[in-house]
Length: 219
Length: 219
DNA sequence: TTATTTTGTTAGATTAGTCTAACTTTATAT
DNA sequence: ATATAAAGTTAGACTAATCTAACAAAATAA
Ligand SMILES: [Mn+2]
Ligand SMILES: [Mn+2]
Ligand SMILES: [Mn+2]
Ligand SMILES: [Mn+2]
Image (cartoon, rainbow over all chains, first blue to last red; front, side):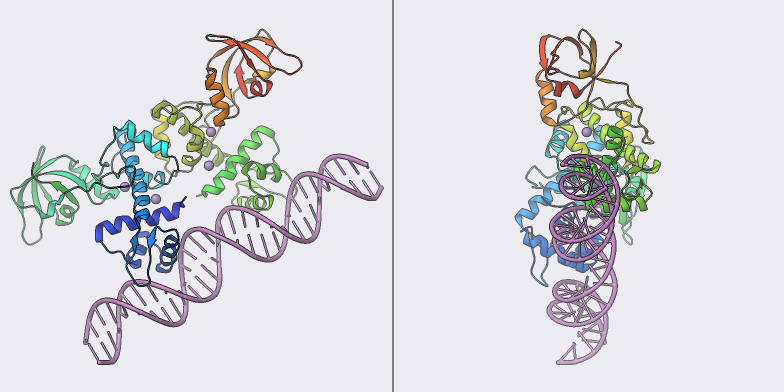
């Protein structure tokens, strides 16, 4: 059984690998807010446990076993977030920190029940895919809003950052998942977009925001 | 903030104090399955934190602060058990071990929501009282079934042990909380009771079992 | 009341997880 | 190509939580 601490390393490594491909000790230590030597020695330990492939001065990689275990933790995290939102009435901006703790609970039946009660959801409240029972993720084919063109109509499918402030910002302008956005105008010099959706006719979104919104195209 | 470990000490000390009055290092170490020196040094640490009153060779006592914090952990434990049974469909024999972990989650909103969704329950699925938000327990005036007399009719109100096996034993004979029991006969030499309830006309319960069942008298 | 057993304490070791300081390797800039 | 900077590693220290061994105090039995 892995410790709470080890699980957080696995999860961070899994997420970074998927975002950036190669993961360095440096990046991982930044992500986890730990010093490099701390991460270095944990990597050796996880390598002993056959969860990580560690070679001096080389990028870090998860083994298949490591990917599976990380996937299962992320599954627990995302099922929990979904459960908190759908069954307990929390807002999508409130659930990440709670899930961060509950993901470490050792009780497969608990997560199996969440899954059943939710009807086997495939995405969490932020639009991220929920890995299956073997930790395998089914990747989704979304596009950053910032990569779309003027005139396109797209559906908001996911957010890539789930900080409280960002999600509250989206709440404030009714930018919920599923909303259909029409891109009215893109300012070429700074990438700011003017979009219309629902009852809102002309919301302006900075490039920073648009880069964090993932949308579905061919509607 | 107290650690997971410290919380388990506080809870165990609280429970033992309520059962037995005085608590020795020895008892506490047995309860927690730790060696005496381990408990001894943790008691000194908790005394530093003003949670425990520790004097060499004297019985252990919780301070008011210690009682409050212990009460709040027990509240989280029992609310969780109730939530798992009432809202997630678990059996009363399945929830203790899960609650043992979830009680340490630092997220007051989570437990506040459980409380609301459950309609502010006052007892857990085993009939134990749920402490209020300040950790105060409202004690209930129950009697052990083994202390009742032949001919009495009583209502099963709580169980004092919540091991999986014991609760499955009760499930097996439909001995659920709320059931009205009529005591038909008590064997004077071994305290075995013959009781009738529901559709069952003559169940025999050993003294060991009867001592673990708490009942309400004046119906 | 003395001897024995039980309980409690102290001292010192161990493991997990973290840190800082010093050093080495690799990458980047001149 | 060399110098400098950044990233990675090693060594050693620290804290929390546990243990064992040895000793001390209190309780119990003879
Ligand atoms: Mn999350
Ligand atoms: Mn976590
Ligand atoms: Mn319980
Ligand atoms: Mn616990």
